Image 1 (cartoon, rainbow, N blue to C red):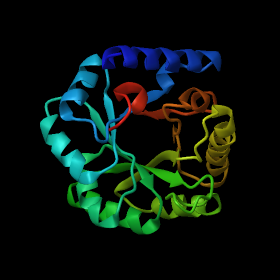
Image 2: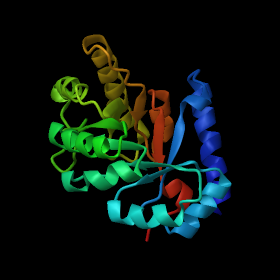
Image 3: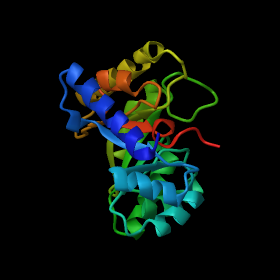
Image 4: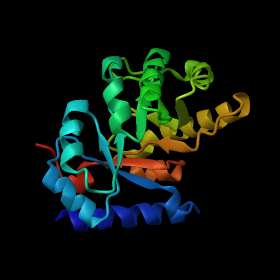
Amino acid sequence: MDIGKRLKDIKDRINDSAVRCCRDPKSVRLVAVSKTVSADRIKAAIDAGIDILGENYIQETRNKFNALAAYPVSWHFIGHLQTNKAKYAVRLFDLIHSVDSLKLARELDKQAKKVNKIQEILIQINIGNEPSKSGIDIENTSNLIKDISCLQHLSVKGLMIMPPYFTDPEKVRPYFSALRNLRNRIHQTVSGVDLHELSMGLSNDFETAIEEGATLVRIGTAIFGERK
């Protein structure tokens, strides 16, 4: 199946999932995870209707960014971001999904100021308390958002998770609902923030994520096929 047919199938499933839970399908945006995918194949995806690309690595993105500069796409960073790469991140990405510490936030704020930009970010939560994964724990999320809200060149737009992997999407559902509930609690306790975005759901479980409130679903293999 070519990229165009894969993409149509994904978009149809996103639409159907949203309608089933009485949501506007336009409230869910598709982030095409293009790490390790060549610029030529990404061009094919853009021609088929992709308008948001999700990348994990700064150097890889820099090469693709130049090759695809003529295309009207939005670039999202979805991987683990090291503080020393912040200066590149603010120049490349419209939205950074994976901010998980005040140290990283301060460096992003510093670098965004240099280029006169308000960098939009999401806060990554380690929803499953997994030692192998990045993200702040649930208990400290509100305080981190309060601290970041004082930084003039950052704007917190929502939350992101990489939950534990299960082949059965229903086993992931509690993590998705936990993120939605956390967002709702923060809205009640932290003034002046609007955490509209919930970045959650991958190729194997995005329909469940949409049912639980996802606004950004990150899909790679279902669009581009298995990575080599």
